[in-house]
Structures are given as structure tokens and as C-alpha cells.
Image (cartoon, rainbow, N blue to C red; front, side, top):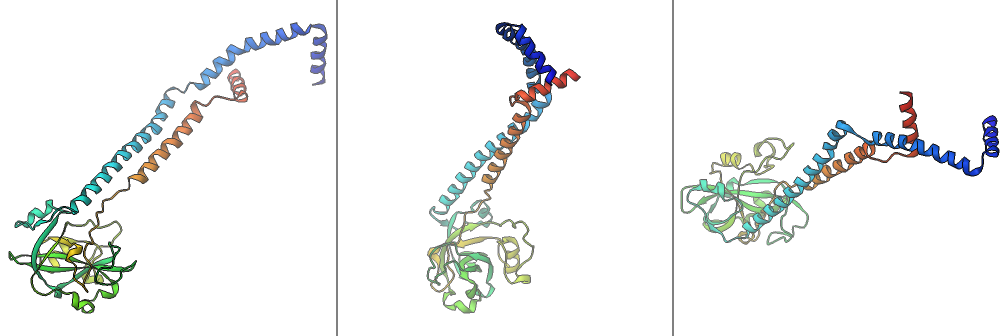
Length: 295
């Protein structure tokens, strides 16, 4: 080390300063094309880089697609909510037409059979007000379903009379709310509810209540047509179940998908950029040149 320093000092004495800097400048100019060529070669990512770039681009496209799907789902939910507020129509004579009328308000006359009541639960009250029954608050309860014999035909359907707290699940605790004789009511048509994931199969015979709106099985057990109607709040009876429990529920998990796909796109692009397009530091460039010289 001391010898090299001494040599450099001796050269500075022999060679004028201008000539010394000229040598350094010419050396830098000689190395510059070589360094530039090496850096360009290092920044070329080839077919492998193009293939890996597909991952962030594909996940970005999937995230954008989920954004469009979310707006479509929100518009559909709004349309269904508006449908529940439309003017009610008479219950169709052909009950098979009910399959095309979900969330459509209907009116009909009939007589309830409270001796065959069923309950679906646990459920929370869909309305903030307690109505004529009790102050519901945040209590957990059930929806009471009773068969109803239609007045204008020899057919019976299932009617969700509404929500009651768990303390009122027994029919004997709300006899004043059990309507006798023929009544005219209105409500919202509902179809078969898909069994939620991880929910066990079964019926009221095993646990005493239904876990979800299994219209087909409930109708077979009660001996009715597979038709289900949620009574509206106007059809509620003081002291009885609170109607108006229809919820417009559609699976809408698009926001979580949006976050997932865009996050993957950002992360994978950052990894790709760091691997293929990040400008090298002087130290890494020198190491790369030395590596190329050895090979």
C-alpha cells in the first residue's frame, strides 16, 4: 500500500497536474463505453422478464373487473329494494308463476293455522321500531311462519308473520296476536334460500327451529304448496309478530376481492421492477463488470 502511494506521489511530481488529470479523464472515457454496455446488458430482462410481467398485469385486470362487478351488484341490490316498494299485485292463480316474482309485493286473503306454526332463527329484528309487540332493541329472536289457507282456492301457502323475541317464541305467550278467521294481508314473495356454508343440514324435528328459509322442506313438513311470503309491516297484528322483515341480501364480497387483486398486482410489480428495471448502484455495476471479466 505504501509503495503504491509512493509511486503515485512520484508520478505527480514528474507529470504536470494538467497532464495527470488528462490521463484520468482518458481512462474514464475508455471505461465509459464498457460500463454503459454492461449496464444495458444488466437491464435487459429477456423472455423471462416479459413472462413474469404477466402476473402484475393479470391481477390488475382482475381487480378492475371486480370493481365493475361491485357496481353491477350495488345497482342490482338497489333495483330489488325499489321492487319491494312497488304497488302490490294479487297473488297469481297459478302459483308456479311465483318463481318469477321474488321481492314482488302481493296481496291475498286467507286464514292462518296457528296450530302448525314454525320458527326460523336465530334472527335479529330487521326494523328499528319494536312495533306493537315489544321494544325490540337489539334482542335476538325468531321469525314465525304459519300456514295460511287461501280463501279463493283450495291451496295453502307458508307466510312469515314476522319477528318475535326469543321469549315470545312459544305461541302461548302471544295469543292476543294470533289472528282468527279470514284476513286480507300483503307481503313480499320469497324463494328458496340457499343453505349458508358450514350450516348443518336438518329441520325443526331435530333442533326445534329452522336455521334458514328452506321453503321446499318446510312445505313438505307442513303439507303446503312451496310458496313463501313475508308479511309487510302494515299487516302486523298488535301483540303478534312484527312484519316487514324482508332483507334484500345478495352476496357482495367484491370489495375484498378488489383489495386482494390490486394488492397482489402492486406487490408483484414492485418485485418485478426491483429485479429487472431498478437502476443499478455504482457498487453493483462495478461488481457486475468484475463478474463479467472473470467469465
